[in-house]
Length: 297
Ligand SMILES: *[C@@H]1O[C@H](CO)[C@@H](O)[C@H](O)[C@H]1NC(C)=O
Ligand SMILES: *[C@@H]1O[C@H](CO)[C@@H](O)[C@H](O)[C@H]1NC(C)=O
Image (cartoon, rainbow, N blue to C red):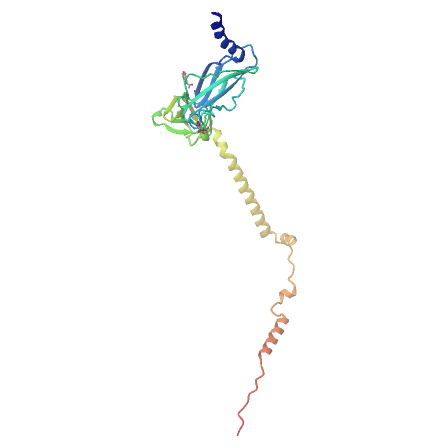
C-alpha cells in the first residue's frame, strides 16, 4: 500500500532523468548601450556536447501572432553560453526570452530570466573614445556606437569649460571630425552616451595642444609646390615660343616654310570664265525690240 504512491512519485522523476535534461541555470539579460545579451551557466551533465537554443516573444508575437515564439537569429544549437539579442529586440515593448539545452537527442525545458525585459532598461556607460590630433582638427573614433544610441561630445578651450560647445555624434558621423581649431590653443573634451533623456557618465576629460608645428604646414606645402612648378613651366614655354617667333624668323621658316600661292588663287579677280558668264547673261538680257513707227496715212 505504501509502495504504490512512492512509485507514482518516483515515475516523473525517473522520466525527467531519462527523457529530459535539467533546466539551464543562471539565465539573465545583460544590456549595455542598447546591446542586449542573454547569458546562462553551463549545464552540469555527463552528456557532451551540450547545445543551446534561444527564443523570444515581444508585443508582435504575443498579441499579433497568438503568443508564438521567434527563434533568436544565430542562437540555435549553439555551444556558447551567451546570445546576442540586439537584432531581435527591435521595439520598446516588453520581451519574454527563454533558452533550452539539448544533448544526445534529449532536451531540457525552457528556462527564462525572472522578468520580461524592456530595452529601455539598458545601462548606459561612457563611450570608448580614441582621439587623434591632426593639424587643426581632432579625429574622434567611438567604439561600439550602435544605431540606437548617440554620443554628445563637449569641447572647450582649457579653463573655459563653461563656454563648451556640444556636438551630437551618431553612428553615421563616427569617426567624428572636430575641425576648425585654433593653433597654439589647448582644447579639452569629454563625451557621454545618450538615449532619449538618459545619459551615461562622462568620459575622463582629455586635453590636446593644437600646435603650430610643421604638421599642418606640410598639408598645404605639397599643392603649393605643385602650383609653382606648373606656373614656372608654363611661363618658360611661353617665353621660349615668344623668343623663337621674334628673334629667329629664319628658324621658323625652315620648320614651316612659306609656299608661294598658286596663280589661280592670286589672280582670282581677273578670272575669265566669270567674265564670259557675265557677258552671256548681259547679252541674254538684251531682247531685240521692233519699234513700229506710225506710218503716214
Ligand atoms: C545595469 O547595471 C546594474 C549595476 O551594474 C546591474 O545590476 C543590472 O543588472 C544592469 N542591467 C542590465 C539590463 O544589464
Ligand atoms: C489566432 O487565434 C485566433 C483564435 O484562436 C484565430 O482565429 C486566428 O486565426 C489566429 N491567428 C493566427 C495568426 O494564427
